[in-house]
Length: 283
Ligand code: ATP
Image 1: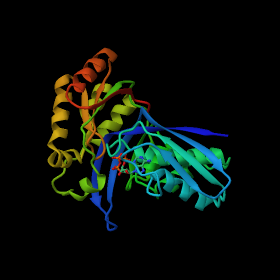
Image 2: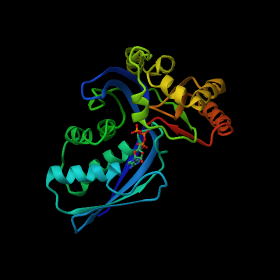
Image 3: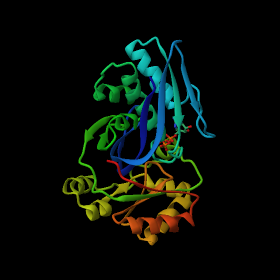
């Protein structure tokens, strides 16, 4: 039996950095929502106690460094599974882009193994296990729309945003979250109005949501990679209603209600940036 799992990317509607903890991590507050841009994960049983990964990517290792491998290892250890698994990953989510691709894959492996071995483990438990692998894995176990607190492991579900289109523009650079978090000067960073975004979601108010989306890490990534700021300016100029960098970047997204306007902006951004996507919010 082959198990198929979709691993959707996420965007940050808000990302606030609150404080630095004694363990070196930062406490954050992030509103995230899933988008219709997904990797595909296929899982097959192996008789031997092995975890095999197959994927074709120049940027992602297919060995024990892969987050999908780490998820399978953690799952097998926790539940004492001695059977092996073959994991095939078809990547569509750009790598090191701020879209949580590795975390999405890890979460999909946890959900998929739960089905493959018919264990019926509740999602809350899978999310706890996921948060030991990466900060965004807990969110990706549930998907949809949620606010994450702590270092990302405490998840509270939220109403989905009003339906809209999203244009993603990724410059040809990868940005590591570790580097961006390393540049944080807490007294200098800006803070989004998270409560206003929460209110906009509850009221399903598209304009209010677009006016209030915000990301404490934007200025840091703009400082390190000025081309990301230029992409944001181009997306604003093109007429997207809400524009923000996702995660630690470098992907910038634009939110638009009407499909024809979204298509126009998508075509315009393609002249400006190599990797551009037009998708819907899933959350
Ligand atoms: P982060 O915030 O962790 O940088 P991101 O969304 O910006 O996340 P990812 O696409 O998750 O970026 O990739 C981050 C790093 O994780 C890359 O160095 C990549 O090689 C590594 N990685 C490990 N496993 C995976 C995977 N299954 N898919 C994508 N990247 C992976």
